[in-house]
Length: 450
Ligand code: ADP
Ligand code: ASP
Ligand code: MG
Image (cartoon, rainbow, N blue to C red; front, side, top):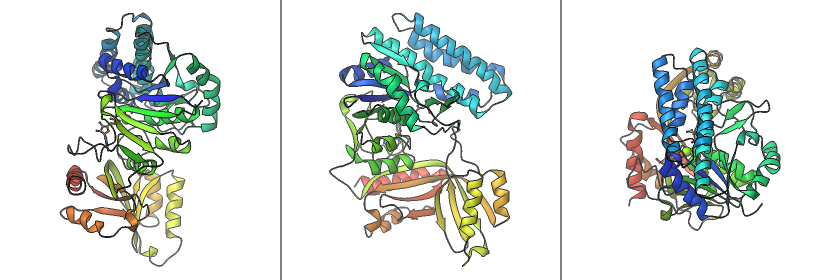
């Protein structure tokens, strides 16, 4: 398939008619761009999540539905011929209305996925019509016909073999005839139920689709001209990184840099597809290339912040010089499907953080049943309102002296759960949410602005 380029546009990139027109210009500028993956219009997924959580107050529910209609009507109003797109969007809005009512009676993860998928289903109707009105042969494709996942609603896992086969059958032939506009974030399970890949999942969708069609490139168009040394909203002096390796960028995404969904680079890395990140508002500014081989590998590359961390500390004197304690702890966690992210240990205690496992965006919870079982073994202490700060770089575990610089800069902060050494690419720790941005700002000034 070789010459295919896949372009993904995030929510702010398709926020309104002007933004969508900028996307269209970017698509037109590269004749190899055959597949376009779009997010929902900015703000739409948040409104849908609110409805999916169950809004009992009917007036409030109507207000949200009105907001949703307004966002899409604003684009429809500027199309030359909105008849067909309007009919499609209104049908989806009717579905949203009835699903929101159902969710107000009884919310469920399955219902949530059905509801939140409607954002992408609507935005792609608008973008397709807009492209056609610019004279481009564009076809809207429902990606649920290709992006097969398991039934883990809210954080579904893709089924790669089926995706590849379905892409070959249904998607690739279509791309030969026209530019295909499809949805990020959503998929379907074997029974045809709508699923989602988790918040921010459109990046991951785009990478999975790029892998399935053996794309030669993947472009992620967003609201910043590339990956920066840290989130520019936190540190205004953050600077764009022209080129970064897959491993460094993966670490950044995993450690919370919102610019990329954590799993995005997995398919790209598997198929060695170069990834470009740029701003659809300012494409002329260039962006970041993520590649296998890069020219420079600095000791410090970037800082990432991930909030809503849950830390669980388990203490037991029985752990001292005993074997099998940690095995038992992890057995209990595995039994209750609790996924562990970071871990540090001392003689009689072990601290761990929990992985995010759903769409909610809130702090992950330790299931009550797991807590009860763990308490038969040791004391269990759960803490919230923590953020994970990660310093990403190269050869960190083999370099001398920099720990002094990092920890010296943060001498006034209470650092928890310092993890260092397992990966040559990162050093990370927890801080209280109230001082997390300050910690990033101080470190950025010291390590990146010198
Ligand atoms: P999209 O809707 O296009 O997917 P996101 O809001 O998910 O966009 O991601 C883009 C945002 O990621 C930026 O506006 C920025 O605030 C944030 N961000 C976090 N870390 C970084 C970083 N290291 N470099 C650039 N942006 C970052
Ligand atoms: N629309 C979804 C979200 O807001 C997916 C995405 O934009 O990546 O999470
Ligand atoms: Mg995103």
